[in-house]
Image 1 (tube, rainbow, N blue to C red):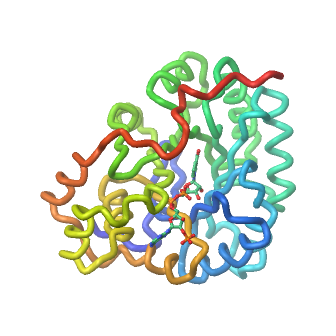
Image 2 (tube, protein in one colour):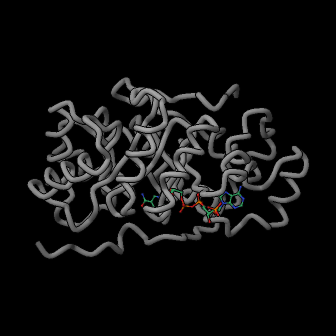
Length: 278
Ligand code: NDP
């Protein structure tokens, strides 16, 4: 698979998303500006934030100050659980846009499938999409049954599902459903939040390619056709995570890594999300 840092994937609605992005969860507002600027300098053109991360202002400012045209950078944000519902989602979107300081967003996601209300939230995303303030809309942490339920009322289906994915959690049924329905899968906590970087099996494979385990895992996501958004505030690690385009994982090693799944989650299970009192 020939790829480079600018490689993109076409979403179902025709727009393109860079396959490698930078995640900024847990990056404090006072650090996010430098973090995003250094990533852009390295060549990242995709930033994944959310209102919940509390750092949209710094993300927006870094992008505006970078000297890179806004259209060349793909930015994602997400509506948080407490803001779900039709009217409150519209307001939450406005707040995110104000903080980011943009006149359009590239991708807006429902952060989690809050029971009983995510279909209303989705109607708001469709309205924002049809008002042309966002280039694509999608979801995060939706399992097959959430997507099926959304399909009953949706005018536009999500073009992206951003889910927790790494070699220890392969989420096969959700990934399969997304592939069948042309929903692009994006991997969050793609490095398993650095928990599995010393796994002997992974170290052995990475050594074969003269790569770090982080690089091996990022390449594994790309070879599986997932969009991948590793987070790092460290310039050297940002560079390392982007240096994954000069090798390819053999079929045998891909097959091996694809069966390392132990259903181990770092984040919440999507079905554990409680309804929010409105
Ligand atoms: P990641 O799997 O990206 O791991 C990040 C951790 O790994 C950090 O501690 C980082 O430390 C460390 N790290 C990064 N690169 C390396 C490396 N090369 N070698 C060693 N350690 C490394 O976890 P995240 O949870 O941050 O997930 C990525 C992004 O996904 C988030 O930032 C966010 O944008 C998104 N996300 C979405 C969620 C959702 O519900 N939709 C939930 C969680 C995340 P350091 O910074 O010091 O380098």
